Amino acid sequence: MGDIIQLLALSVLLAGLAYFVASVVNNLRVATASSITSEAEVNFFKARVGEIMDSRAVSKAKEELSWQGFRKFKVEKKEEEGGDICSFYLRPHDDRALPPFQPGQYLTFRLNIPGQLKHMIRCYSLSCGPDITQYRVSIKKIPPPRDQPDIAPGLVSNHFHNTINQGDILDIKAPSGQFFLDTSKPHPVVLIGGGIGLTPVLSMLEDIIVKEWRTEVWFFYGVRNKSDHIMSEYLRGLVSGIDNIHLVVCYSNPSEGDVEGENYDAAARVGVDLFKKLLPSNNYHYYFCGPPPMMNSLFEDLRAWDIPEAHLHYEAFGPATVKKKQEADVQTTEETGKSSKNSTERTVKFNKSNVTAKWTADSGSLLDLAEKHNVDIEFGCRAGNCGACVTAIIKGDVEYLSEPGEMPEAGSCLACVSTPKGDLEFDA
Image (cartoon, rainbow, N blue to C red; front, side):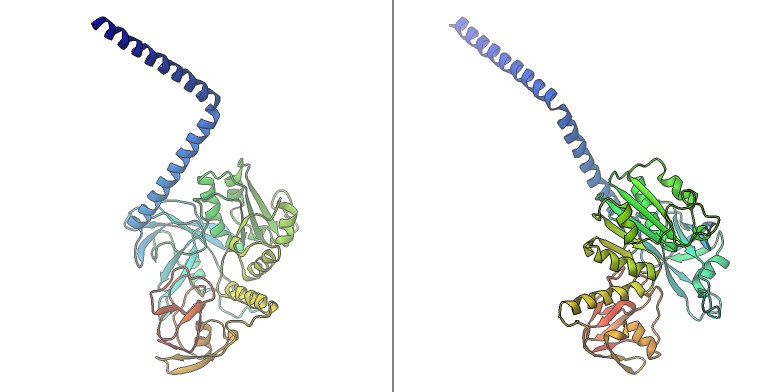
């Protein structure tokens, strides 16, 4: 009986072993046949895990390393870039690491300028890619208008150029702003910088290169001629050897000594006409920053080229672009036969100043209305970014001409980019 049991057990064992060997052989065949697919899946999985971990690490670093209010920074280096533009390299005075920022965001500065009764607030875009040790801003020295030489030059920009030097200490808020490139999801993009508007899109470009995007990227940089062309060698070197990034430098008014193909790539203004010649399609996200005339034409022409507004991302230099978008929206509304939501007259009462004024769509923002009636409201950027014009609402509500860089607390608004929804009482 014992022998029979042993034989049965041996038979079961041999059958199991045969099944196991067959399974291994079959699995090896399947693995060999699908090795390429499996490797791709594994690599994709690893990439997704890496993205998730990177995203969590970035969020954690932002939370732990960011700061409220103003923080002391030392000017580590001051570097002339040409074209009346100077770069300032800024390192935290406490030597702590810096939080990650979104490429395209800006820094807010608080400056005490001799002769001014109160401190000045200004925002300047970061012009660097990711760095946890220092920031860089590149600032253009603003002269008087060409046709009005008696008007004073830019107060703050000239203060930076003429007074701020290496070793000086500055008060700076943490990076902020809604104009930025989402680098967590690579997608085909067109980056456009005009003049000093180069700075935020340069930050985007550097981040794209660090993260090794493989999607198609076009970078358009527009200036008048070589005298305004900054960081020329740096830009060329930055994209050299990267086949999916296309740099196009445009001179709108080349000088006699400017050489096409050497100094610049196209004798043209940056715009849709040029895009139609160079881009294989219009299926991109467009990020642009520059002087108001360029911003206005780009916004209108890109919409006319059937680019979805969700694919248009832009930074306003002052209120001009914000107002232009509002005008375009009103025009579209009129074409559809519907009345504009801001066509009604509103009554605005500035309580502290004991001033009552009438607001219409032609009045602009609440800050514009206040200035017309000699009501003093502190301001900085005039584009909803720096937070200097935050003012309490006593009664009523507002709506925004454009999305602020950071929404104020409930019961307050940013006067430079807000308009009254109805009659309004204002703590100003």
